[in-house]
Amino acid sequence: MTTIGVLALQGDVREHVVSLEAVGARAVPVRRLSELEHVDGLVLPGGESTTIDKLLRAFGLFEPLRARIAGGLPVYGSCAGMILLADRVLGAGPDQRTLGGIDMTVRRNAFGRQVDSFEADVDVAGLAGGPVHAVFIRAPWVEEVGEDVEVLASVSLPGGAATHIVAVRQGVLLATSFHPEMDADHRLHELFVGMVG
Ligand code: GLN
Image 1 (cartoon, helix red, strand yellow):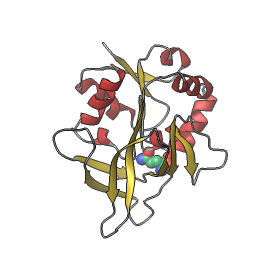
Image 2: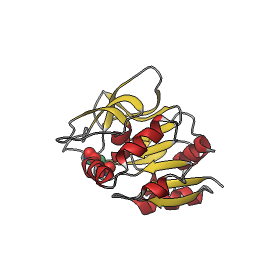
Image 3: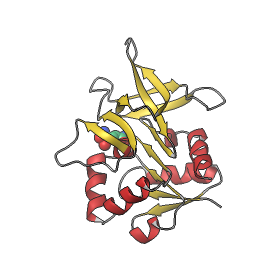
Image 4: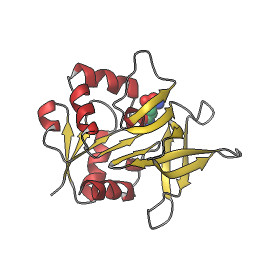
């Protein structure tokens, strides 16, 4: 059985465990290096990317995880997790670093105060069964992607003309601005588990 870790330093860990188990994976919280060594893939949950970054460094996980991602570990990052997977961040906190892996620039808290949190039905390329009901909470968007990055979904704000990238994939790395784990729709977790398997 595929074992997927959920980084459990901060954020909505429990919801990801439920979604992963719903699609038939074994899900284990990861707080220590020894736990990281035993997973086939990893979920980086939403939360606060600056805090997760600090905790990764405090727990001695930052460099080992960065190296595993560079070495081909499949990872799915949601919201703060998307920021952690980005090679470049706009609006980063002081000293904030990312694990990197996806050749993209993300903007933190991009949707701004007016729509700090909102929900939208989002079509995700490659997902059968209609749009995903996506929950955005102080979410980033993707401003720019490199040529190896596949754009899976974009949204436009109510009344706005511009569209913003909110889901991407590069190889075995998947990232969404939104939180699919907050819904009973597990298709993105299913997609990720398939990428790991
Ligand atoms: N705004 C948060 C950050 O910058 C992300 C919010 C979230 O994960 N829901 O890390």
